[in-house]
Image (cartoon, rainbow, N blue to C red; front, side):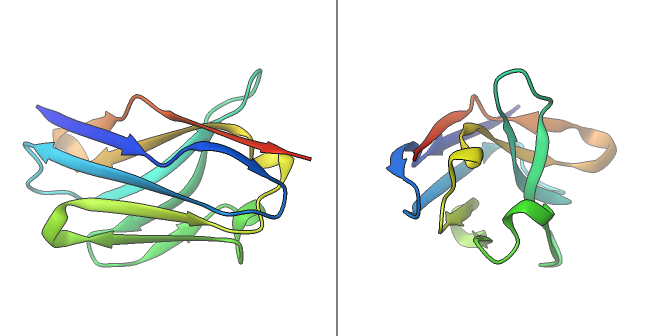
Length: 116
């Protein structure tokens, strides 16, 4: 089993910053990638950013230049630094851990609300 514990969401004004954290524990050998996805009301879940085991990163076009994903391997934790937040960034943000064919795991989600 894999447990993902997210923290760092909240309410912020447009232009502000938040930092999300996701700590992984349990059967986490063979991680291929960790990342953050978000789901706004009435919309599909979408990739925000991901980082592979080799350190490569991918970002949604809408967050490039504003968000940065990073990881601390010693703590099995991935972070998402979100700057210059916009109201359209409002969503529930979910941490994801991928172990390839072994499994794909999700956190419970943390709410991010950006007021205009």
